[in-house]
Image (cartoon, rainbow, N blue to C red):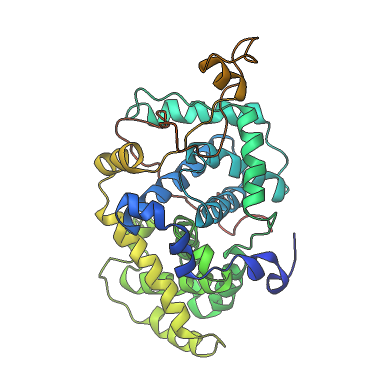
Length: 358
């Protein structure tokens, strides 16, 4: 992986203008009705990636890179081109190679997907059986790489976040560890937003550092406090001025545009605002089943010939449909769950609070 962010494909090719992303998503936004509805769908599938990754016990960094791949793909491609239920494990499969975790066994990955769908979603999606197999993941992996122009390098905010927190440590004293935990939790939650498409990792990290300092001011740690409840940390109202005073002095010494940092902070807070308004059990099933643009699986040529009574189809049916591109002449088959869904818990920092191995 490239060691210099400023010379990497992440910086040169994958920091996108927000208006360009909205232009590529225009057809999906028109069908769904608003960008907010679109973001709810992406949040749901980022949580699916998290659940799949947790089931196969990969590192948080592998899950983070898979989440970025997922957003990169759908920043330039319609939801109806590839079923997100297939793209999610395909992103994990590719990410495990790029992050040098070791190749995930495809059969183990598919088994984990089936297990997660049955155990976590069956209560809400009673009629849904995970339909994809290993050959579908192989094919989808190549489509994903092609869509990203084989630009697979991803820089995450974790490394600069650790550097910034270490720099603040002498000033925060006994609050330093709590500050790191909260900033890390905010960084994990940024994976559920488009921040990775629009801002470099160091700016995302600075936004998380600032939010963590604000949360320390409003909600100082107590012996009974729960640091993992990260999105409630910002909205508490217990006053304390010390961390904010430290932040003001520390940020004034940085050679960064403070407006850019504030943009990141507002982006994260807007995400929490959206989560507060979401009615998971009622909204998500309606969005995914009734409103989300769906891919149409093309039949193999021999099956089409059989259906039309033409020669060339002898020998039985062809392979199960994989991640085929859209055919407008066919009606979409049922591609997803049909009842209610409860989102998996949001990402938490790994067991080692310092972060994933770099």
